[in-house]
Length: 130
Image 1: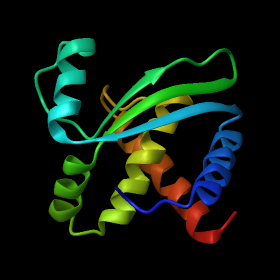
Image 2 (image 1 turned 180 degrees about the vertical axis):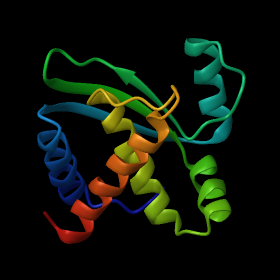
Image 3 (image 1 turned 90 degrees about the vertical axis):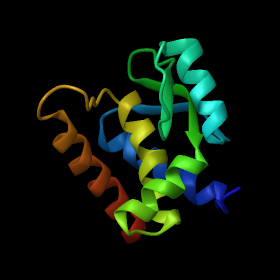
Image 4 (image 1 turned 180 degrees about the horizontal axis):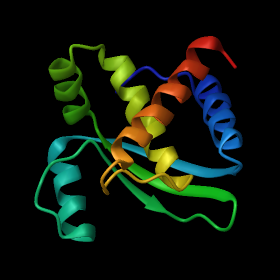
């Protein structure tokens, strides 16, 4: 399991949520391995592949709520492939799920770049302690 400061994480996620004009509600992060995320991906999305995060959206209006499964195996593999730290990649994935709940998508042409820009802004907020 990663070392996470829950108070710092909650404060950061609230700041990101506010920056997107939303209100932070209940977020549940489920940290798992590749096999569990593959099982969830198959069961709920009919996808037969590994991924770093699966987000279940329970938002109501501006209230952001959701469950997020994060494969720590895939986060580690991605960090190695991107030549970045496990910690920074995990934070990127954590905020990626929140950004999905704030209405930001990354599947259509051009959306991935927008998502990455918002991820970078959120990570900068964390580094700056805002």
